[in-house]
Length: 256
Image (cartoon, rainbow, N blue to C red; front, side, top):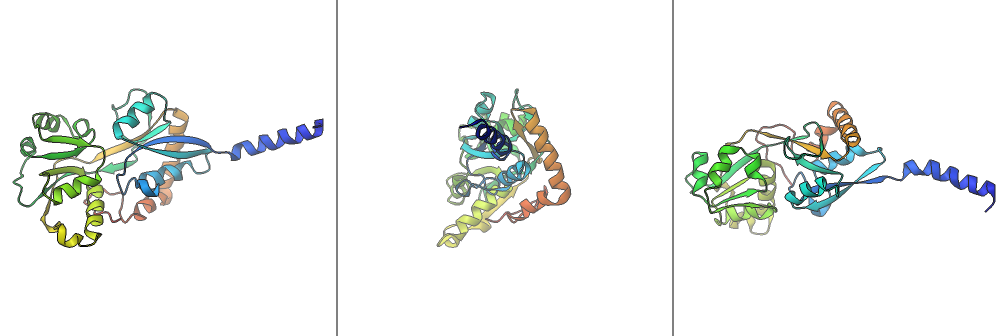
């Protein structure tokens, strides 16, 4: 290749480089629809991340893992970002502004006597991972005394277990619970097998505001700038609307 040819190749490489998106490895929990819908590689939080990094030179690559593992891998430098983090949960990361609000509820069947948080000490309770750290010291102290308390990585089975009477109480974010319940009721004979009118919802916990965590401050700052723009121009709220819900803290039943 002559000098002119080498020069032309160099020029092409210089101008093509910005067009090649660098992967942004994002650790996300197993399916927590409508926030993360694994089999469709989409969801409210994934769409927010994609929209924020559109045109940035970074292409989000979502890696589905148990929640606990996402935290470890971020701190080990094996991920570039993770979702659903509260201040104090990580020691070496840069947190974004608050991205999303979860409202965790206690769900029981109508036959279950439930009045206060103290009742969780004697019931069969199924909660999400890290519920002890997220839901407060009083909650942690109560469930630590309950041998029938569990925390699970996959939420899809929790709603079914409750409807079938195989657990007494499920602690889950409201949109996730109603998403799975709608899917179960939509199955063949689902309306006969599962009696949704027996579900009782108990509001014991304040809203939980989650952030995204990044290994690099520059990426966190980019995300924050873009998220603020999305909130101003309506794209943020539109992403929620695409999943049949809104960003409000109030009781919302999300649809599939």
